[in-house]
Image (cartoon, rainbow, N blue to C red; front, top):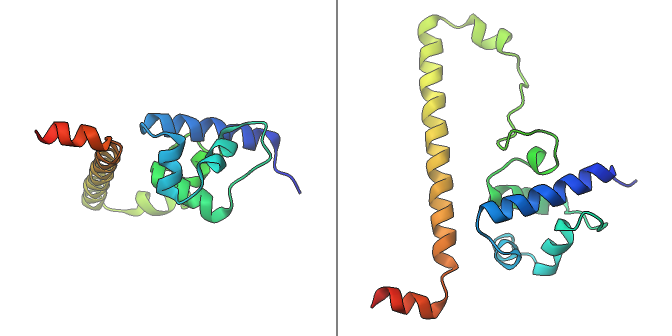
Length: 139
């Protein structure tokens, strides 16, 4: 059984876009996911038949800080938020005070996630500095 052609094209497009947004080379992404670089190249080619395994898809999504659903084009929300439990069944039954607390907690979680993503980007940037350049920076 072969996947939809659009799924492969969307994965290839989004993987390359996210890699570039994170200032990663194919080799850099491959290293972070513990994969050979040519495999990343094949994943980014829309006409390739190579698809990641489930474990590799999860690894790519974790490194790129997106959901698997986003990588596969199933949602345009990078976090992959899906309304599994309807708001009406949970939030609507909360008191006004509890809703305010929930919103406050959610904002804090979003801020922490954004901060984590920024730290990861900075750590990736630091890893990609050539050795000779590090010595110049320290001088």
